[in-house]
Image 1 (cartoon, rainbow, N blue to C red):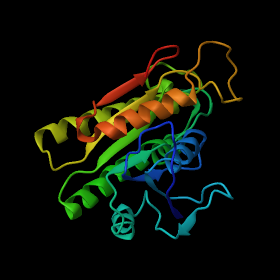
Image 2 (cartoon, rainbow, N blue to C red):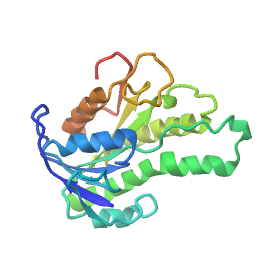
Image 3 (cartoon, one colour):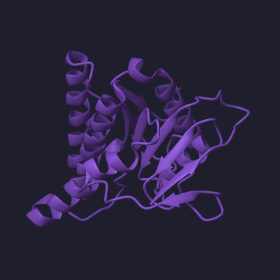
Length: 232
């Protein structure tokens, strides 16, 4: 599903832009969607947001399997940024005891959506005559060995490489989508599923980082890492 949202936030400067959010119902994606909906940003999301948020929903094709159809469906919106927040945490057990099909499922849920976003961004960029910026949200498992959560680490690491390669290719060919990886390199403070009392990354810092990267657009770095207790 797709929703278009407009609004204001007196704290953050208006960005006056349109963002397509893939993964808007997840823990982080929902908060980013709600935050951007309170700014002068127009937000287009691919699943139905929380009830009562004042969204108007439009049916879209499955965005991972049909990126070209999605690009066609949202072509009327002046999208300049695509933000991807998908994946999540799980502990399926040791890698040696997982089957190949299990790993393929993690590829489909954690990695392929980001590649689909690149395809959508490239198609929209060709249509509008200038590149679309892609922001990929990644987690701390991409930077560390997460035992019993091996597929999450493997796909997070692969996402880091995907973003790096795409960013390097955009440096060679400026018509390609510019890509920025935003890494939440620690537990999120407001997530009550955390089992650790160690230092956390607050959702406010994540939102500020997304704002910063979004405003920079084509000038944004290839990667931003949000470490616990550090500034965005």
